[in-house]
Each structure stands twice: as C-alpha cells, then as structure tokens.
Image (cartoon, rainbow, N blue to C red):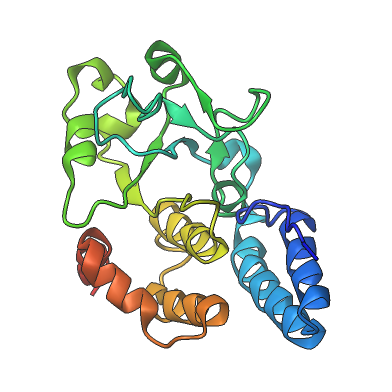
Length: 231
C-alpha cells in the first residue's frame, strides 16, 4: 500500500497542508496525534494573525522573498536559481504582515528579472540561508550597486531567513519563518515574542525532540547572532 501526502509545508492559509497531516493520521492510525499537531500549528498562526490582521493593507511593507538564497549572487546558471527566484504565494510572509510584491505572478517558484525587483522597490528583503556561518549572499545583496536605489537596501532592511526547502517544504521551518518575519517587520508589536522558545516548541511538535531549534540556530550562526542582538 502506498499513501501520497500532498500540500506544501508553508500552506497555512487554508486546509491544504493540514489535510496532509490528516491523511498521515489516518494511514498511521494516529488520528488524535494528527489533530493535536494541526491544532498546535493553527494556534501559532492565530497568535501572529491576531496582531497582523489589524494592520491596514496600505501600511504593510512591500517584501521581496529570495526563497533560494543568494549564495551565487543574482543568478546561478548551474542551478537555475538564486536571488532572482521567489515565491508568489508564501503564507508565512503574508500572515506575518508583509505585502509579497510577487503575489500577482501566476505559478509557484518563479524567476524574475533583476530589473523587476528594482522596479518593485521592496521595503524589506528576506534571503533564505542554510549555509552555516556564511553571510556571503546577504553581504552581496546589501552592497550591490545595482540594488542601491531600493528602499530595503537604503534602510538596512535586508535579512537572512530560514530556507523553506529541504527535499520538500518542511512545515517546522516555515512556521518559524512566519514568526521570525513578523518580529523583524513589527518589532514593537511582537516585542514579547520569544523566538527561541517558540522555535523549540515548533521543532519539538514536528520532530519530537527538545532543543532542536537552539542547536540549529547555533549551527547556522546567523540565527544565534540575531537572537543575541535582541537581548
């Protein structure tokens, strides 16, 4: 017997990903655990959304999300992706209160022209980064003369974020990205949000092990540096 679980691990805006958990619960005779996991994830979404839903759409910052990072500058011809690869639909970003400037593009995981990113003029840029101790992509984008006119660059609002892919779209990372992005964009509204505590809760809920987020933050280095900067 074969069971195929659909849904993307960042699809928190409807029942898409949660249906995958339900199917797994049915297949593994673990319906109660599936319901508990769904309730947990929805609770985290509601925690953030209860704040951001009150923000006027016109007041939300324009955000560009480089979902494949920028480790090889603007575009990596070998991989066919890099800074110019983005996601027109990324629920963690919109739930966090950002205006995804690529949202009007049809499809998913698309490449866009560098000139288009400049024309969009985002207020924030998030660059996914899974390279331990490596800020090459972040530094390149921050110091790129081609992007110097963009508000995000001028205001210093360029940040690493968690890589949303890993042979799929892991929900633990993407659920945490939602909280992290909300904290970065709205530091006052989420002043009391303890990201390390939330991260460990999320990773334990999905992986069953304590302290995974803290270890991962230490391994990647940039999350630990960011968390320390909040103290």
